[in-house]
Every structure is written in C-alpha cells, then in structure tokens.
Image (cartoon, rainbow, N blue to C red; front, side, top):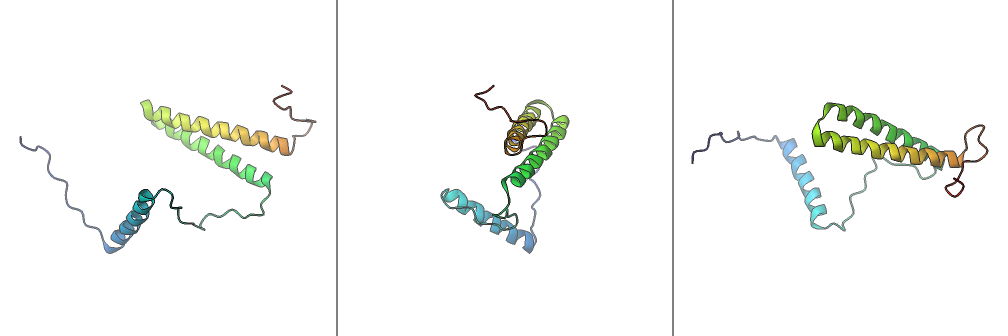
Amino acid sequence: MKKITPNPPETSMDSDSLKLFEATERATSKRLRNPTHADPVSHVFTILPNIDTESLLSHACETLASLNVLTTDLACKLEGSNRSLALSIQQLAVIGELLINRALDNLDPPEGVSEVPSASQA
C-alpha cells in the first residue's frame, strides 16, 4: 500500500530550545519515574505566612471569579463535549466561589445581619 501523505519535515532546534527541552524532559521523567518524589520548590509565587485568613479567602474568591469568566468565555467558543467540559470547570469555579463567600460571611457577617444561619438552623 502506498503512503499518500508525505513525511513531516524534519525540524531542528536551536541550542537554547534543545537545552530547555532536555531540562524539561529530565524534570518530567524524574517525576514520572518516582511519583513520591516531591516537585521542586519554586519561589516565583509565594504566599507570605503572616497573611490573615480574610485576605486569603478574598483573593481566592477573586481568582475563582476570574476562572469563572475565563471558562465561560471559552465555553462560548467551543462545541460538543469540549463545551460541556469547559462549563463543568466553570460550575466548579462558581461552587468554590460560593463556598469562599460563605466562609467570608462567617468570619465577618454583612451589615444588618446579626448571624449567618448554620446548616442546623436552616
């Protein structure tokens, strides 16, 4: 049987791309070979240890709200199962945002509300 499609062209990497590829390959394969090996610590994004709970929850809520918007916009551009997947991610973001908002309300009830009802009172 003859092959109808031609072979893909050979691509060459410059030395920087090759070094990056090799470093990524080493890190990935080491992690895959030994799942108990901890991921390397990165200090690019570090949360300071003395930040109060309310600030952490507020930032987490804003992050989930952004994820909600991003996945909703993405879902509008997709069709079929990919759209369903994006909407599932969006729904999880909304649920997380609702949970965090309730935690914030428990820490500091809104004005005019004497107490946020607990599940046993509802």
